Length: 337
Image (tube, rainbow, N blue to C red; front, top):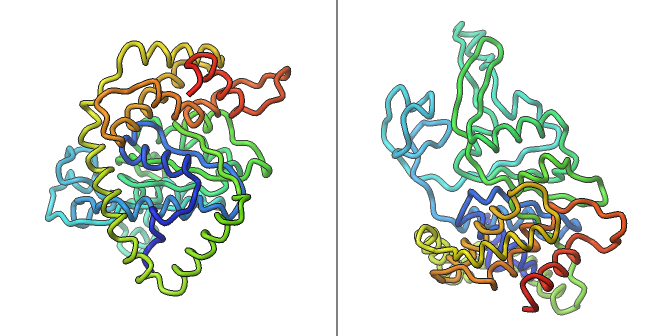
C-alpha cells in the first residue's frame, strides 16, 4: 500500500511546516517532534519522503551515492561507477534495541566464513544516506548510540574502525526524532543537534477528530483510491518544494532581520550561536517555500518557536513552558504579529 499522503494529514501545521523546511534545506539539522502517541508523527515522516521525487543513485551502491558526487566519498564508487538509476528517497527506522554493529555496519561474517574475505556489511547509517533517519522514542535511545549519531550528524561521514576494517562512507541524512516527554527527556547534546523542535497534541475539537478518523478509515479501506484522490494536491506541493530548493540560494537575509534574530536569542539567553543560525536558515527556507525573495520579520516570527524552544536554559523562577517563553520574547523583541 502506498504511504499516507502528506497533504491528507489533518492539522499539526507546525510539524508539517518543519518537515517541509527540512526537505527544502537539510542543513537546518533535522526535526524533533514531541507529543502524544497517535498524533501522526511517524506517518508524517513517511508521507514526506513519499512526496519527494525519486533521486538518482549509482546502481549497486549500498550508500545510494549520486552519480555526480566525488568518487572518493564512497568505497564502492571509488572502484568505478556503473549505470545510475532512480530510487525513492530512503527512510530508515533506527529501532531502540539496535546494536552498534547494525547501526554503523560491521564485518560481513558470511563472506568471512565462506570465502575468507574481509568485507564490510553496511549498516543503517549507510542505508539512510541522502534520505531520512527516523528515531521513534528518541528520548529512550541508549547513550552509546546517541554518541555515534552526534559524531555522524556533525560530519556527514561514518568512520568504521573495527574487526580489522578501516573505512569511511557518506552518511548525510535528515535526522527526525519523535517521542513522548512524559517518558523521559532527551540528552542535551542530542537535543541541540536538532534544528527544529515541534510540539504536537491530540486534537480537542470534535470536527478535527472526526476528519482524522474519516480520512484514516478511507485510506485503510482503499489506499490506492485515497492516494489517487490526493494526487493533484500532492503534485502541487511537490512542485512547491522543488521550486523552493531552487530558489533557496537566491533568497536574501537583510541585516535588520539578522539583528532581530540576534536580539531574540539574547533575550531568551540561548547558548552559543546555533540558535541564530538555525533561525536564519529556517526563516530563509520558509521564505523560499512561500515564493519570497527576501526574509522578513514575519518569517522569523513564524519559525522562532520551532527553532528556539529546545535551546532555552532552565529558569527555576519562571514556571511557564518554553513555548510560552519564546512567544513572550517574540512579542517583546519583534512586536505583536
